[in-house]
Image (cartoon, rainbow, N blue to C red; front, top):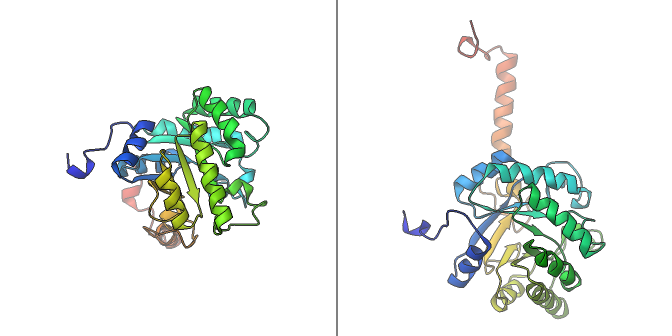
Amino acid sequence: MPAERSHRPAKVRLRHLQEAKEAGRTFSMLTSYDALSAQVFEEAGIDVLLVGDSAGTTVLGYDSTVHTTHQDMLTFTGAVSRAVRRPLVVADLAFGTYQVDAAEAVRHGVELLRAGAEAVKLEGGAARADTVRALVDAGIPVMGHLGFTPQSVNALSGHRVQGRDHAAADSLAEDAQALQEAGAFAVVLELVPSEVAGRITEFLEIPTIGIGAGPDCDGQVLVWQDMAGLSGFEGRFVRRFADLRGELLRAASDYRTAVESREYPTAEHSFE
């Protein structure tokens, strides 16, 4: 086995993310909503697959994640979990499934685990600490999410970097500490200044996962359609590692041309 892969476990567990942080190894996370992408990402060695409520905007055509339902999350979670063995599968708790009370959060968390998730993710800091604690007490691992929290896009007045001033940065740090104390095993930091994310990563004992939060987080996550150049989204924090939109456009155009010119199908694509 190559040296750079010697640390890769046969199955990624929560402890492996903690061990990676302690050893100074960064780990990778991508969103996934279907069996095909999940299988490709597993083959690529991605450590964590996030069945994100971003499926509402990337797959279902909504303009925000608040429209993604619990049933949507159950469907996508099942598709991903049935397709892979190695990655840790984390599923988002949909908007409205955990904001009312902790009992509702536990009920929905149980259903996500039954669908195949191995952990759940929710947004919010100290205000969600009791909910995180209830989920963890029920045997449901929890990943937190701070900074820009998409389910609160309306309250945050759009997609804006969070924690720019000292007071806001201190509040983020306090929220991160509260999530850790409540039992969260990791925290996503989204659209947070690099210095702030680095400081939080340094003092937290649990891993941080950045998305638009600079290079110092313990792991990194992107929406896979953004990463692969399929969505067309060109946010500052996104690096496009391919141009799947261009390739798919070329393939579809070539297909249309071949059909219209009767170059496809030919005898080799037909039956006698």
